[in-house]
Image (cartoon, rainbow, N blue to C red):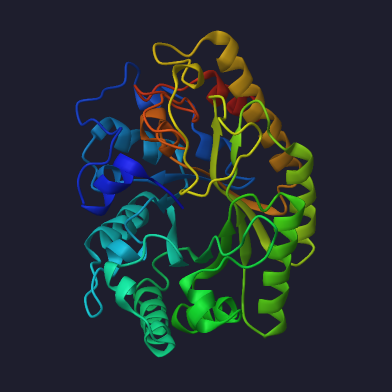
Length: 375
């Protein structure tokens, strides 16, 4: 789904994304750390999001860690339309091709992200007024990009974040110009272009009842049209102090009952106070102002907070293991804390600690809590 502010701007220009310092080194060797991908290999795929630096393997320590720990990967930005299709008649496949090669070489399954999303569209889309032109872009983009990687990537997030919080369809350019059936049509085109690739719908907050109901309607509508949809991705951007376990469990049950895979596609647990209370919206336009009270861990992440983060992840993974026949993948949205988009969202300039590896690529207590579940 997301990077934003400085991280997003650097990604879009092809520059080094924040949080991946080429001089960064670990103090322990990768081989001395247990492997999540090995620990959970009989349960579900363990994934991560990769940025430009990681795809290009600029940091040898990070590269070794990724290969050792993860069996799946999703690109943060490089397969979004703004980057992969910058001009009407020009595509930029260089980094996407490198990602595919990286996955093949290291037995890492790639989820391509994403074909249709209302955000990070090419600049030329701003000037398109007619429905016919939007339709032409829609068809050409899906067909060209999906067909190029058919059989080379494991799956596509075909449509990303099409819903409002109340479960209604977001008023995107695609809804405005193509009507409410655009989602079915996106999957139809993707099915034709990529018959050997799994096709998913991906969104945030769809563990919440109203938005979940909207996602269920999307899945039912696609299936009723005789079009293939293989799974649904629940993003999983939550707070370590407020993980909605009951709603997550109910979502696994309800989505599984539709005959689709369930994945947790962008998992991170923010360690910082939410300036909006319990509103965990991952809408990248939903930002807030900085103040020191909501940035408490700039110098260290104390043991008390480490324990809360570890418990949040442990409780989630106990639930995932309970439903491992239905859950096919769990992907963390980033490799280490420095990379996390949550350093800049919903407040710019904070120091978050949302992932399993710290800023020196060292495993945290939360990492070992997940390893210990499999002992």
